[in-house]
Length: 202
Image (cartoon, rainbow, N blue to C red; front, side, top):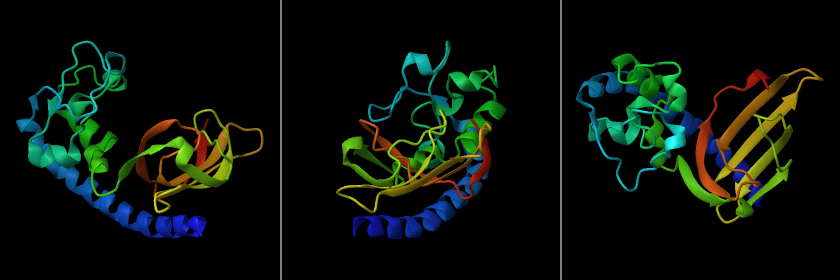
C-alpha cells in the first residue's frame, strides 16, 4: 500500500510544486532586482543554517535582502554573496550582477524550500524503497528507485540514472524529495526537475 501512496503523492505534488516553483522563480527575476538595492550585511539569525568557513571565502559577509524578499528569494545559508564556488565566477561578489545572478538564477527561490512542504528533515534508516538502494549522479552509481518515508509515505521520490553503454553519458531524472536510504540524516528538498537530462556527463 505504501508504494502506491508514495507514487500517487508524487504524481500530485510534482506538477503542483513545479508550477509554484516556476511561478515564484519568474516573479523573483523582478523581486530580487527591486530588493537588492536595499540589501545589507547582517549577522545570520540563529535558526539559519550558517555555513562553516570552508564553504565560503576570505572577506565573505552575510548579505540579506529585506524581509519581504528574504523569506523566498534570499539564501539563509550563504546570503546574496554566494559560496566559495561563486567567487571563482564573480571575483567581486558584492556587485549587483553577482548577487542578482546568485539569487535570481543560480539559486532561484532558495528560501522557498523552507516553506509549504518543499523540504523536510529525515533519517536514512526510515527511508524505504523499491529498486536500487544507492544511486549517485556524481560517481555514476546507476539504477532506478522509488523511495518514501516509512511513517510519511507522501514524502516520496523517483530516481533514475542509466548509463549509455561504456560511455560517460547517462540518462538522469529525479522527481520528488532528495532523500536517500544510504544517508544518516538530512534535509530533503523537493526536486522540481521538470525534464530529464538525457545526456548527463559523469
